[in-house]
Amino acid sequence: MSKVIITCAVTGSIHTPSMSPYLPVTANEITEQAVGAAKAGAAILHMHAREPKTGQPSSSPDYFDAFLPRIKQSCDAVLNLTTGGSAVMSLDERLAAPKRAEPEMCSLNMGSMNFALYPAATKITDWKHDWEKPFLENSDDLVFKNTPRDIARILTELGSERGARFEFECYDVGHLYMLRHFADRGLVKPPFFIQFVFGVLGGIGPDPENLGHMKSMADKLFGADYAFSVLAAGRHQIPLTTMAAAMGGHVRVGLEDSLMIARGKLAKTNAEQVAKIRRIVEELGREVATPTEARAMLGLKGADRTAI
Image (cartoon, rainbow, N blue to C red; front, side, top):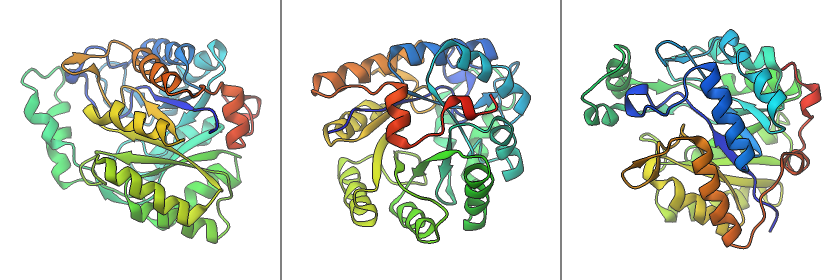
């Protein structure tokens, strides 16, 4: 089995500041936590931005500019920018920062889907900001839009025109078939880095059987032309990433996906989660990939060819 690439998703756009005092919001917090995760063993850093005063998800290129160069100067990790942003953003908004930064990697959700966060609102009684409660509650009528036309545009503007490769986020089996469709059209070429996503309400559930099924279907559709990684929401994060590592896959952790380090215990940093999954991976007898090794495995263009 090849070395394990650890991705760390540093802040995301799902969790809100009222859920954890440790969620990084400001440029300083995001920079510190990203660099800490890289030092702990993350080869790839998956990046979102937030409005620094309220913690609200933001697509502003200026907010990204406040931390991306600092992270690049402080570590060698691959910077992977979101093209998903938040489901309440337009496609133009979502693409503004990655088009300016021209990163080595971008995430790419492989379809439109319900993206329901509203159950989380029932667990919070003390809200820090006015935007949080309606943001969560109104997700019972929220669709994340990524049509085939949207996907083709992202592949063209960030892939063909700017040289980025992609973390293909597949929230269900149909997303694997959509990726196969774009491969058949010649808009994406191997090696494919496929992120199986489990536990988001609207996508495939976090059952071990589903991981086996996603892997079987990816084998059928892509043969030896792909590598898979796993992320799972909340309490399913470590069990399913451990399973992925045992199956020969790669792993993703981070406060975007789970705020916890153990049952009933908030993670204080992203680095805690990276260190935990690294220990598990190494105890399974596998080695963790460096950023240089990850770049070679995924065919990335190199940090020197970005605009960061």
